[in-house]
Image 1 (tube, rainbow, N blue to C red):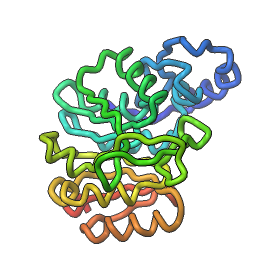
Image 2 (cartoon, helix red, strand yellow):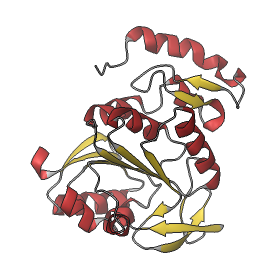
Image 3 (cartoon, rainbow, N blue to C red):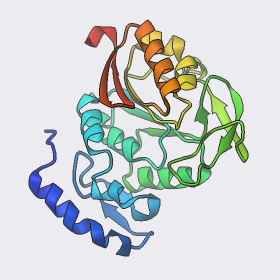
Image 4 (tube, rainbow, N blue to C red):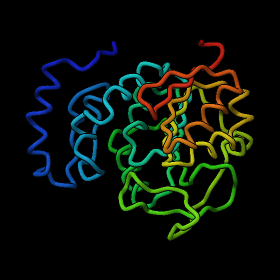
Length: 242
């Protein structure tokens, strides 16, 4: 049974938060609250609100509610894996999760967070997702959550399109989460055939008004209806679910 946060959990989380900085980075902790409660997490992966269970609380709740057991989930821009491990739990042993992440430091933590939970239903793909295959220039952005494809990037990373990923024999997604710091329109463009074939539910974080408008236009052209979880957070529902 999928339960929302209780008031007692929220108040207790606020009490614990000031002491989070005292937790050793190497510690493996149970996630404190929310739908990922009890999953194990490497404390040094990133912000304390990951393991406190308060990170993007409403979106995390909505994401978890929409995942069906035994389904296929794509986590595009997986970072260190908070949505990935939650999806692994939700789809169960008969489902599959594909986590796409290009940044080496994030990949290390992503693999550890999947590993400490002993999930065998996850494939980590060490690449950026865009509208082209090969390599793209990438900027670190000054933080583990801020890296992005950029013509002024300091280094290059492997890149793939989701259409090529599916063409290589991987299953079509039932649900996608996309959060790639401004490359969202390129991700969608490189997945046009797969989206038309699968019509997955899409959680999409957009970055900047131009990208937001392009993504909205693209999705509505495929028949999606758009709900706005926040001004830059879209839940795109396919025609069959509208």
